[in-house]
Amino acid sequence: MTTAIKKTLRFKRHRRVRTQINGTADRPRLAVFRSNTHIFAQIIDDGQGATLVSADDRPIKKTSNKELSGKIALAYETGLEIGKKALAKNITQVVFDRGGYLYHGRVKALAEGARAAGLKF
Picture 1 (cartoon, rainbow, N blue to C red):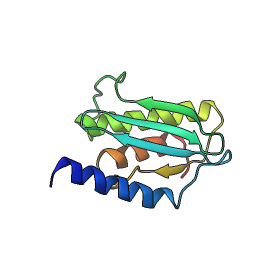
Picture 2 (cartoon, rainbow, N blue to C red):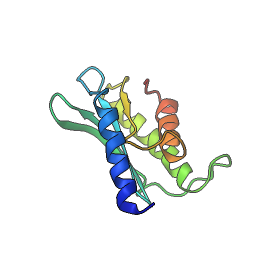
Picture 3 (cartoon, helix red, strand yellow):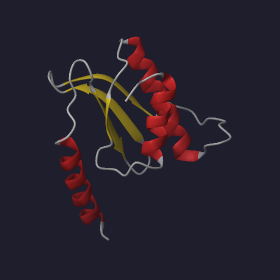
Picture 4 (cartoon, one colour):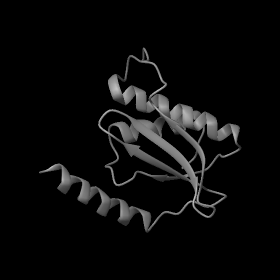
């Protein structure tokens, strides 16, 4: 499968997911973007169209997590970071937007990290 086809299929899945989820002021949306090398997360209030909190794995150093390794460990740490930033802004509940990606690997690790930091979704 070529890259263009994969991208098109992801956008179709993302549109399908986004018809069901919408971030409000009470429960903003935790959106995930995954590139080949990095992972990014934003907490967005769709009513205002504003990003409340964001985090990515670029400033995070490699961790010594024995259970997770590589990019999955960085995704977990990114989830912990966005969870801490959200709790600092009194955001406790979010709606998870996986961005058309399948819920496994780095996307799942980011969600587990955010839950471990205290976010509920």
